[in-house]
Length: 138
Length: 255
Image (cartoon, rainbow over all chains, first blue to last red; front, side, top):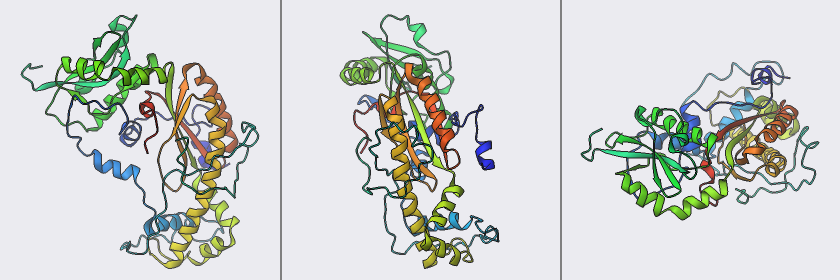
């Protein structure tokens, strides 16, 4: 068990029960959610738009792939080096042929009939069947 | 508050007013700008509101938190239809005509669909290093690229680094497909309704809004605790709530 696993336990359990107190959490929960009525007076929402972009939109691109590569390369799998390499070199160029893939939630719902008690033990699906963007059930 | 048109009514949401004294409807906490919570009723519906200065823009941290605190406090006791953040109406008559009367069918529909239930947000994320290490060990091409790109400074768009990131991203997407499916299969039978919430980062697995019967909350929590324990070496589960049913106002998910 990693040290991370221990420190994230709340109240003796493995299920985290965070109280959403941070701005990003609250925005994530309430923004764009709720009944819209015609009779309202439009009021300006200072700063919300920028935060929305930060939270909701991730375009997979060269930039995104580099983030994955960097996260991978920070791993110290072989117990030598690795962690000191990241002296941040800026000047990231995004002009390349950015393949767009959906950053949205993807997941093929598997037709498990057992309810998953045993299957949840160590789900290691290496071969998910479908790569289509999930639309149903959403 | 001045009565010269410079004030309006911030509307948090709508609850059923029947059979209850109004005072019992309102949580004992301050509302927007520290103002008191009030109820505006029409027949069996009540809008929960606070009188506010219209001119001041809404969007500060305090405003967002106030909106969510009031709605979540209401949701703990009552069925509530949350309104969009930032909804300010000119006067009390407009609340009745524009919301409680005109929108009555929609409000009633949401109240019916969410009656006796609260929302929880369930967020699953990978223990990033563990899952990435699995990906590297499990794929010879990725392992080779990982070895070759270790000397490349971060942020350098070297073709090998881009290729590595792309392959890792694709491998994680496959894992995400499977893991989110397993999780949903385990959880969705326990809830009345659900929505997949959009989210994306390296460690993300799935983010679900769950509409949970109040009677089922303890069972859901206990079940999730078991799942969280089973997967804790590679995944973290966080459950946020109870919340007002923000994601279930729309009958269908947002496209």
